[in-house]
Structures are given as C-alpha cells and as structure tokens.
Length: 130
Image (cartoon, rainbow, N blue to C red; front, side, top):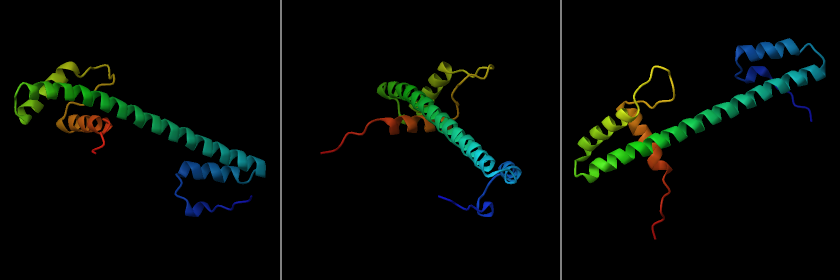
C-alpha cells in the first residue's frame, strides 16, 4: 500500500522536517528507514510522557490520601472545615518539608493540596446507589 503524504499539511517541528529533507534524496529503503526512526522516536516519547503522567497521578493520589487522613482527624475533633484544612495543611507540611536535594516532594500551596485531595477523592471507588 502506497501512501503519499505532504509535509505541508503536517505540523512538524523544524528538526523533523530537516531529517525528512535530508533523507528524501536517498534510496527508497533509506527513506523508509528514516521515517521508521522518526515514528519509533515519537512512540518512545509518547510512552515516556504517559508513564511520567501516570507516576505523577499516583503521587498525587498518595499525597491526597495522606492529606485526607489529616483533614478527617481534625474534622473528627469537631473543628470547622476551614480550621481543619489549615491544621491539615500544617500537618502535611511538617510531614513533607522542602529539601534542598530536589527529591520528589509535594507542593505546599493550597491549590496543590486541593489537586492532590481531588485526585485522591476521584480515585476512590464509587458505590452504586440502589
């Protein structure tokens, strides 16, 4: 099956266009090898990108679960929601101080904690209502 592709209709980065231009004067086998290399590189990037996002989601869920434990502890003590969130944030920050070595550590801002908590809550299985 022969497919003719016009690079003018594709939104390709300049370096990819340079690679295609460099290999188009070669033999047909060399052009296919060049195209296969580009496709393989794109697939590697997609896998890396997907794994990176999956790992980030898992960390968010883990940190959200930890924050939820702190929050539920303070709510169970009879505190109102705003104070419970503030104290849960303090507990979370105490458990995860920012380090200078650049390890994986969660953000401490309110939006970051909200994202972690939402990711955790969305990961919980929902029970069907009968």
